[in-house]
View 1 (cartoon, one colour):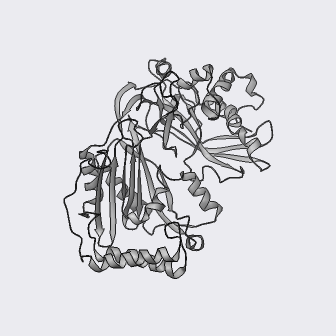
View 2: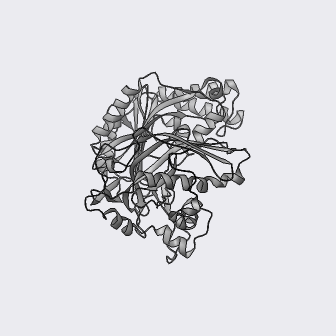
View 3: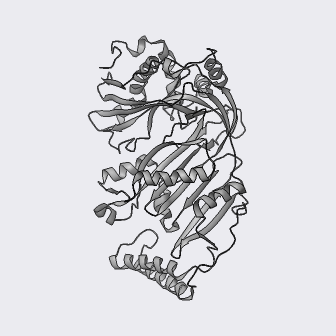
Length: 487
């Protein structure tokens, strides 16, 4: 049983008068927008900002009535299918008040590219990837193909022995004419590739490894504004599953869990790895970023049979997000929001995707394995330094009311007798909500995120890595925030 009486039914709460509208717009993407849902969808950020300023002095975190030890509840939904259990640590920012902030998206500059190259590749040799690379580089590729040929394991790239043999012959020819050492060139920091929207620099940390730094700008929607560094381009396929262009993090962890694949931890101590990641943030001059999460990330090749037997390579991953007035944006696995277009716009079939700002740094025994920086922001205005927020007791009741409704879809989807939902952490921080009709402009507001797992659905366990928010509640007005839609 929860600390609050379960005799309080959903129908008895005034809040629930808004639930049908909230759920259609925010919980179930398949619902078609209605005029009422359209109002909820806009979320009226100006109203939220106004409500955040109701109390002139705002609400101090210590005034929220947050339980000292943990958030606990244990109940089964009325249909008897969902068991929702919480024994969760509560994580609060180390500050007295939480602000409301306006931000806008910005693009990477040549100065940013230079800073990234200096922080990540200062000891590398910049090279022309289209020119001749050292013999050792081709030999490493050749060794891999010969090993594949010997094992008889074909893949999507080489689907026949003949294709594999042709690739081996071609690389042997390149190796025979290759120089012993890499030929250095001057790094080019300008955005002169991909129609002038990308800066791309190849370099070599040693004679057999080719690294890539790629910064992309898409001024139109913000969807393509990202920077990525990968120390070894031959691991592109495995690493892409960790990025916004690959599978979700939850799917990766779920796949590994279902196949019982062991993730091999680096020999380097985690604290030493974090020091390396933190040094990169410092070198980039990002004093307003803080580490919002960490995990052991699998560099997983779904086509490899050896990984199932011996395990797959693991790298430390550290996630950094922006902090404002000492309060960090809460990290979640959500990659981007896609605002539903205004019905009055000419092209109503095109949504406006916008990546969430985050920096993810991956470290292995050799140092920086990869970096991914999505959609940098600019803080344009601190609207309110001391937001007025609802007491935690009310947030907790909203959680108990909404969880069965949000995850009630598993009543018909799941083959299991019961779906288990376990809440393991409750975190207060900032989240971005869209301002209607303003592309790449938004407001950061205080929110409560409930992290945990959902299992027994007949699919992989949602939230295995600890960063899937099961529910995000606006701390100002108690409304639900759908991170996929951005409001």
